[in-house]
Image 1: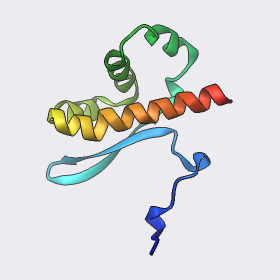
Image 2: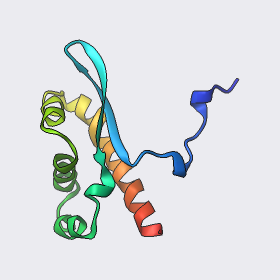
Image 3: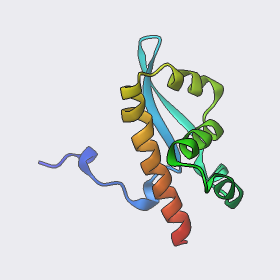
Image 4: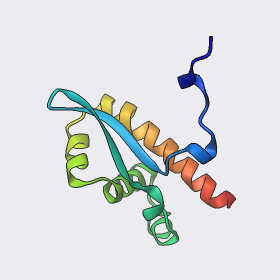
Length: 103
C-alpha cells in the first residue's frame, strides 16, 4: 500500500533551499540553508563557470550556509559529507539551475 510519504514531490512544491540533517549534541537536527535563489544569479554563475564541480560546490555552500552550519559540515566524516551534503546538494543545484534555464 502507498503511504503519503511515498508521493512524489511536484516541482512547484520543491523548496528553493537545501536542507540537511545532522546530529548536534546527540540530537538529530535539520538545518535549512539560505534560499538558493539568493546566490544562483548570473554573477555567481559567471564567477564559478570555470571551476570544477568540487570548487563550485564549496563556493556555493559557503555562500548559503551559516558559520554554524559550516562548522557542523566540517566535522562530518567524508562518507557522511558525501551522503548527506555533496550528492544531494549537487542534485539540488542542478535542479535549480535547470528550472532557472527553463523559465
